Image 1 (cartoon, rainbow, N blue to C red):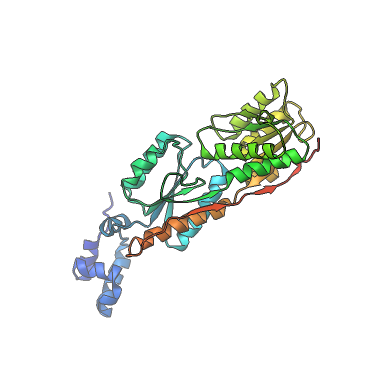
Image 2 (spheres, helix red, strand yellow):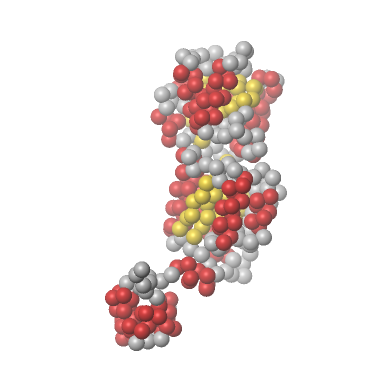
Length: 341
């Protein structure tokens, strides 16, 4: 096995102390020019690379930010990660991206990993509706920011979208198109986003003078295309089938669209569809999908900037003021919902 070149090897080759090599690496202005050149020449000749992990342990500071999301298979979270990575890179940091797969157990394991790695801070979209994982993580005194989730009952920063407003945008659009019976393919009931989008849908129906029975909920265990296909099959089996469907995210909506297409049901003539997130695939679907757009890249970048602000202030006597940033959604209308009733 090849010998790993260490700082002692550099010191021996340059004829200086280990402390001098350390100063050349970390405080070069404190070392005489001739000595610094000799050490740098030894570093180059031996191919020495300093151990970043060891440096971080000594300094108590990491150059890594953790990002834990619900589903990296969802392009929405890929865009969140892109925004976070861009902001972190501008600050000279890297991002460790992890996927809880909407599983509280896996979320707990990754949070433990972040604590073990002493990450600078964590951006978190919680999978655990009970909040126990967050409570357990808080005792490590590692700053975190909630992403795509309002910080209810906590003092931490959060960046989210007004999902109540988003749900209302979707269903108000369908009501304005003449629909009076709407299905809501909702996803796991424990997720705040699912509940808030339902609340917005119900608010829009109430504004139109329609009762709660105008919204038929079809819950799913996951927020993916397969769950959407299953919901589409259930929707087709309803005796009094609604004329429109609002889905809690675009992956569900694309699955519903696949199920309807396979059954020969026309979209939007027989059944209109509205999704949520406005991922890239929404516009590229066989029937371009109307969707509620979330500014995902902006959300990730703002969350990272809040985390960076908190960790930088942690090195000073200034106190960090936690903030809740709530961004506004936007309805993007495409062909999947345009047929009037």
